[in-house]
Length: 325
Image (cartoon, rainbow, N blue to C red; front, side, top):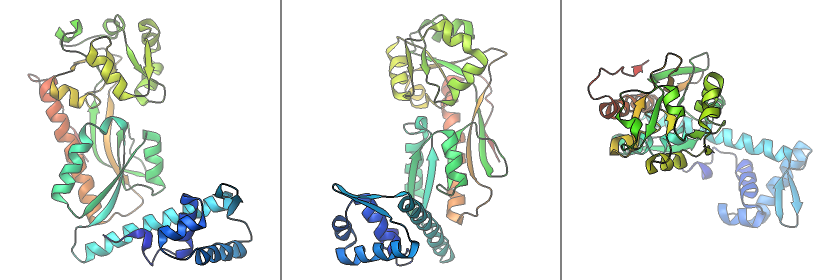
């Protein structure tokens, strides 16, 4: 794959400016891009003269971008991203399945469905390089609309003018606990039953907590959780230890459900509202063919992964399948 950082189609002035901003000095940037420090310094001075503003603050500990410098850094990143997509399109014209695909995903996917998907892409599309950014849903949508990523897999995405949904699946709310917990013997639980046990609660930074606060704020107050965290890994550890239960989804606890260390019991309550998991691409920007293929493959992987988890949590019931779009 072409090295975009040294590609002649990426303006050298922007490349030099980016290197100085990241490394903090002209000398370090010169070593990074294998060119003389005087050549880099001359390019930056010419840019500053043309624009009529300083691009760096020259301080004792190095060089720091000014506000104008930060704007040019953002331009350089957009240029690099557009160049990557263009080169992928050119490879497609040559019939080569190569490309650089940028994905925004949730923290709970990092040790669940994402590692398996990376192996699938490496096996089925060895010419595709993945760049995975872990963000929240709001930031995932923003990155997609601004062209910073090519596709997202996130909770509670809403189709609209900017989003084309590749796949959507319902994620019913449930209670996670160790298999030896008294609640684990039940086919389903109510919010009242959950509130009787120590609850590890997600922080308000996460969508599921905001949903619980809107509709079931009494639950958090009554359960008096000794822990509130934005760390899914900490929450999982407490659930596996048997000291806490957690309100979550099958997808968040997928690996633990599959290995048998966590039992997931659905919350059967008329006021319980399901979340969704979706894979989406931009409705306003054409993607290279290989990117569309990989997006559809990710949607199918979400369906398959949920089916495996539900074969453990709901072995004797008919399960509602995810819906490709």
